[in-house]
Image (cartoon, rainbow, N blue to C red; front, side):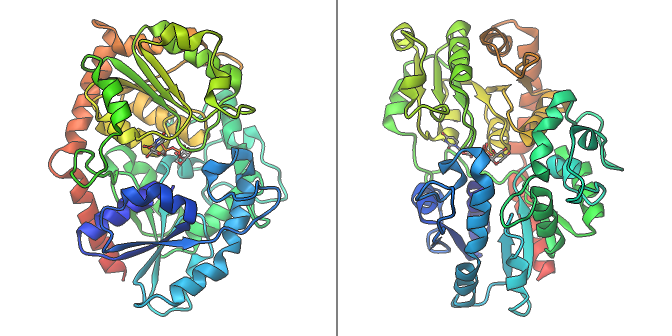
Length: 444
Ligand SMILES: O=c1ccn([C@@H]2O[C@H](COP(=O)(O)OP(=O)(O)O[C@H]3OC[C@@H](O)[C@H](O)[C@H]3O)[C@@H](O)[C@H]2O)c(=O)[nH]1
């Protein structure tokens, strides 16, 4: 979630505003190149205390498997004294404090008169509206079941942007502990209830009704920042590494399939193998950048036998971080196979690639319902009954958007071009940020 906060700081800096951004040291190393206004944005380190059973040195969610995030939230809560000290010692008193899950930030703000707080949400508004609203009575003494969730909260504004059948299991985690004795539901509702304004990284054009629902549920103003993405071609952005630029350059326009699944999700080894066979089967050049699967120290251990030999001329599998926005902007890339994390969703919508979705977590499934189901700009890969994504289904989805003359491919391409025209035209993003700044000025 730190990347979109930094993108927002860049947009505020373009308009002359200063930000001090508190984040773990490791994240500073990773994100420093995204800071486009070093004179106005200070990346200030905080120390993440060790909490058992986290591996020593854990600093961010991408360091650990997702089931340990609960303990990382506890570690985050333990940074409170340091965060408070840093805020109190800033040269000039801030006007605004932005936070996400650190529900205690407004208590710090209350010690400084006239400081307003904004709870900034960088997942789709629908994912909060469907699960984390007062209309749901998810108090602790009642364990949450799939059937509790499957009943939509009263007034939820859609029958399409929903989960179906076993997909509801993906939301059961909201009833589990998420740091310092709070459930995820309690943490997020507390964080939202205590802010002065809620902000979403979304736009009215696709999520207006969900934002209105959140405003009425929490009785708070809701501000929208729009997608908040840097201009990839900008001279201030780091260019794509030569290694990848050279590799992509050898292929024809829009012929390469690129796959990435975000900063958190770790696949099972057998599922990754199956997906890789699906890429091979689709017959297009491909670049897959995913974390090594669970139980594997390196991506090499997870490759099907003889795979590297077989795909040598046209396929690469990389087990580390690549520059996703720059890769998506490369003219050889024609298809993005994505987990549909909210950041990747926006980056794919702004790109000219066809979009194939393999959503994993609850919010990603809702994002997929929005962009594949409602906007019809993407294709979601069909899963088997047990949740398995077969090589045949992945191959089918890729071919449906990449093969010349495919009706589905033509349809999503046309719809995507229409929406892309909205998002990149008429200073759409700039307009959202200008309005957001006006909203903030009214708040302070
Ligand atoms: O190799 C990579 C992988 C990812 N990235 C970048 O990392 C970001 C990933 O963000 P996403 O929101 O797509 O996905 P994450 O899985 O990391 O996010 C998390 O927060 C947002 C939620 O919607 C997701 O469900 C949650 O997993 C993107 O900006 C992407 O460009 C890289 O630059 N290189």
